[in-house]
Amino acid sequence: MKLILGSGSPRRLDLLAQIGLTPDDIRAPDIDETPMKAEQPRPYCARMAREKVAAVPISDNEVVLCADTTVALGRRILGKPENAGQAAEFLLSLMGRRHRVVTAVAVKRGDQIWERDVVTNVKMKRLSDIELNAYLATNDWQGKAGGYAIQGPASAFIPWISGSFSAVVGLPLAETAAMLKAAGYPVYGEST
Image (tube, rainbow, N blue to C red; front, side):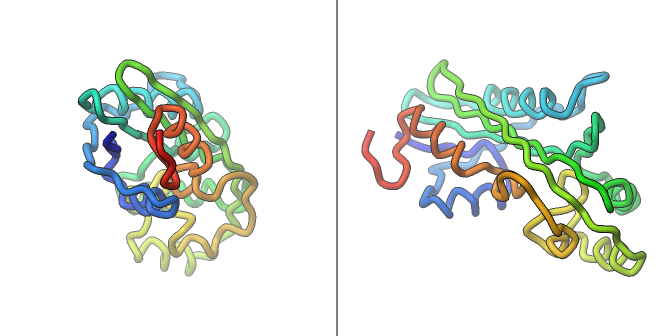
């Protein structure tokens, strides 16, 4: 059986490697990620993972894994900022407050889909103008939900999390491994 990663994220590839998995192929789906009017962060994230896994073509001997991560500030979805100005806006709204990072995972084999979402609470400290501008200058905010990556330079801004660190990075490993096993894909060298 072959494992297909339905994501172009280098972070998800690195996370899979942490549990000894290397995808046989990478097929990043191209879907519209625009939230629906009044859509809540958790249902939005789950819908994105479902739509991504449905958009990846697979054969009978393949299992596809897709995920979506979003930052939720109350009911507001903070996606990937379009520019440094929007990244600054996101970070200013997050600093000094707790927020949620939602990562939804979908695994598909044949016509069957396994789904799970993981919510992690995160607190970002208050940032000085120097810290904010220095961070924006790194460009690490690009392509990151909420304008930051917990495993990058912004890790210095996160004094507290409650939940799954790997989910905040982009893939909750315990849940992902369990879903792959449920789909019949061997994890940790197990045979199916």
